[in-house]
Image (cartoon, rainbow, N blue to C red; front, side):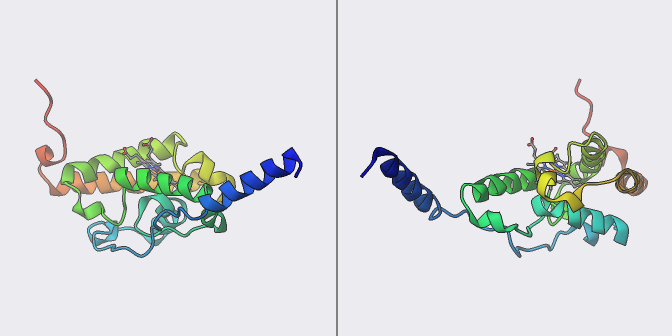
Length: 164
Ligand code: HEC
């Protein structure tokens, strides 16, 4: 066999072996603590969150076909794991009040500076890109949620005490 044929064959075998290592899917786990349990999420905002954020920040991802091809599936799994660790709309109401309050601020910052949704995700999920109307809608909603928390809870349950 020619050398280049051996190399191609070896690469093909490695690729096939990679396919056997499949990350666990993020599908259909509990949403008992979904943000809608405690917060008023109007349909427009809900649509934005589901279309642009839930794939990485909820317990249910809608997977593209290439998630079945490794190593692409591993990269997706890592984004989902990291995204959920910081912010999971299906766990939101289980967070301490302070964290719930702060995450609204984080969303405003991340969306306002175009850091979220992740740019690499938008290359393929073009529909998930937020236009300025949608960004404003999301930011105004987060501000309103923070205001309602401020009205309903004592200030020291929402803010970390200043360090002395
Ligand atoms: C393709 C996956 C993906 C999508 C879609 C996505 N995110 Fe993220 N998000 C991440 C990852 C990964 C991180 C963690 C980044 C890091 O640790 O550097 C993150 C972090 C965040 C954080 C910071 C959390 C913290 O720990 O401080 C916020 C807030 C956030 N995302 C909001 C959003 C919002 C709002 C949307 C929808 C408009 C969105 N994200 C869409 C993957 C995603």
